Image (cartoon, rainbow, N blue to C red; front, side, top):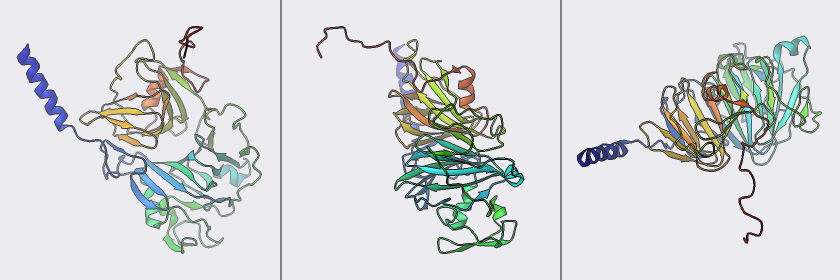
Amino acid sequence: MVRFFFLASLVSAAWVANAASLWLETTPQKPVPYALKKGKGIELGGGNIFPVTGNSSGHAFCIMNTNAAGSHRAGGVFPHVHKKTYENFYAVKGRVQLWGQNLDTYLANTSVQTTRVLGPGDIGAIPPNTIHTFSLLEPDTQLTGVLVPGGFEEFFFHMNVAAPPATPPAPGSGSGSGSGVVLPGAGGFDIPGLADWDVYPQLDFVARRDVVDGRAGPGNWYDGPNPLPADAGAPIWVAKDYGPKFLNSENGRYHIVAPFVTGTQTNGTFSQGTITLSPPGDVNGGAKAPSVTNEYATAFMMEEGQLEVTVDGYDAVSLIDGDVVFVPGGVPFSYAATAEFTKFMYVTGGGRGLDYELMASARKWDSAFYPRGGGALTRPGFKI
């Protein structure tokens, strides 16, 4: 028995010694497990950083963080459409205004343009064939963009600027249908064939300015529930904690899953939302976080609290605000909150990822809080 214990200890020690570090200094160029500290990743300039790219995710998705000063101009970029690319705008800090309208109904004059002013935790989801433009509004604004499929970020690097130019091309200069288009702004540059990059300017679109209480156009905002639609035909707006929520209480911990888009809204392409997690043992005395293996690539970006993530073959990492972890599909990993109300944004590269599995065993939930203890633990007269 002693000899067996000694040999087992040696094997364990060897495994620990051979375990790789999950932390990297920048985004890798192939899909491997990795973690990045806040602010790390491939930098473009102008406050733009890519912690997940098409190359690093196997072209499942891209995550782009933009941190910059804003202005109150109507539309910080020229209005445009993507025919193949989903583009979701998640506000992290400051305020962002986003406009959107389905292209077909805009041309037929059968829909109403919508806009929302996004604060921290709010999201606007822009499916393909949707006219959109946006503006950063505060002196210190951070916006997280999720683009699907991964690879669209190469457009920004091709332009060698932080974002599509603030000044739109003049009417008649081209529409991205294959002809060269000279776009003013950032000194001026020539992009031959915007359509090659899945960018189609819509120069007749005029961004509305009649915002009241952070919104204009149909639908609830902070005045009622923000349900997810049955398909991806129009922009999706979800105010923080006003969208659908689901409570999973398996494995000794609570998950509040708050989806922004699921496979239903993305034709099975990806899903995105937030998870609020309790430490192990909050439910029925459970302790160790189970290992999970997802078919799809999965990324977490931390918002608050502290999360420990362990990927098979790697040292465990402890993530805090702004840190990112990525796990390719088919790789086992586990995660556990080490602080109460740990919250992170998730992105999965398919419609039946981690969030789908959690919601399948969850119940609908109306609160932003998971169940807590039954009240004060001190008795009357107790001296503090």
